[in-house]
Length: 319
Ligand code: NDP
Image (cartoon, rainbow, N blue to C red; front, side, top):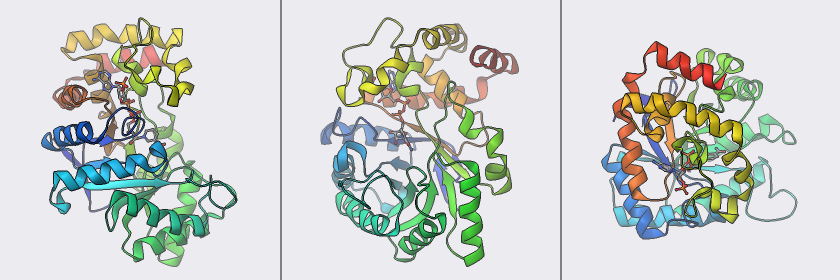
């Protein structure tokens, strides 16, 4: 495993990291979670991602319990959570980055994770109804209280990220250091040209998500939805359409010979491709069972194997 700096921050993250969306609680209980986190950690993963909203808080509880069982030295790994959607109905508690919500939700996440602090705290989405300045101050105060060490954004427009950085600079507050954008062969815009000021100008880091487009890029949906796959889960039924779109399946089929030629599985090929981009600090992987973790970790063997011809063929397929 290699490690990359999270942007210009002093902290380093493993090139592959491990997240809990959909899987923890819905597909993996505590034993399976311990097994998967352990396999990732043994392969060198030092960053484990979570969010308040995942399985309505249950995902944080499972990760907290798993970490307790695993008993790793706290300095050897980073954990994150993300706030925005909220767990409670009513004004001020949902789809927001207001100060009251952030301060209270942080405490809820720490309780569920059974820890004193998270290493990274993300604003899970932007909130156009709360002034960015209010959010920046709240994140700064959370860090000053020792409840998070660094903070970042997820799926924010470049202009909002730059605004947050500039506000923090103006008031000498803790700046956001990292974005969590979607990034895979189908979805490349969040690391694209619009973000040059963010990644080059401000040397922002990135922890990229859904590298396999929820499993589509493994090739498992070529003949329909397997019963034991994410595509079959009621909890995320909104994904079904994109997992079975004919034009997407044709693109995955066109990738297969390239992966075969490299000696990689489609999953390994697709994960390794993400790491070609120097704007990526770490690729957040997901898995519903330990065999997938083992397979995915081996994608590192292929990172250096992309010739210019293969890269331009991928560009041709995905446009
Ligand atoms: P992927 O796109 O890699 O999808 C992971 C899923 O694909 C697995 O759960 C599994 O689903 C399937 N899969 C993985 N590896 C294999 C394999 N080798 N062979 C066959 N199937 C495989 O990543 P995620 O969408 O899970 O995202 C990764 C992480 O990113 C999340 O856990 C979360 O931490 C973060 N994230 C952040 C978001 C944000 O808004 N900031 C949004 C979404 C994710 P199955 O076996 O059930 O088919």
